[in-house]
Length: 76
Image (cartoon, rainbow, N blue to C red):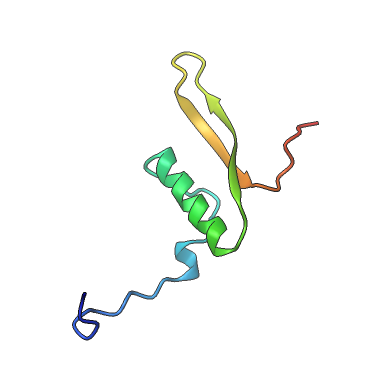
């Protein structure tokens, strides 16, 4: 067990560190998904992947939408 008196206190986390903003970029889709799951957990809502777009030539994903799990499934 670690001695609490010898550890440094955790850094203060600003709301700016975990609230999504327009134009955010991530190194991978997995890191973006993890960010979204953590954000949903902090403000108490479930999340899901909505849709993704792939390049027709090589089938590489070019974008993916992450939404609240209450987001409407139908696209009228």
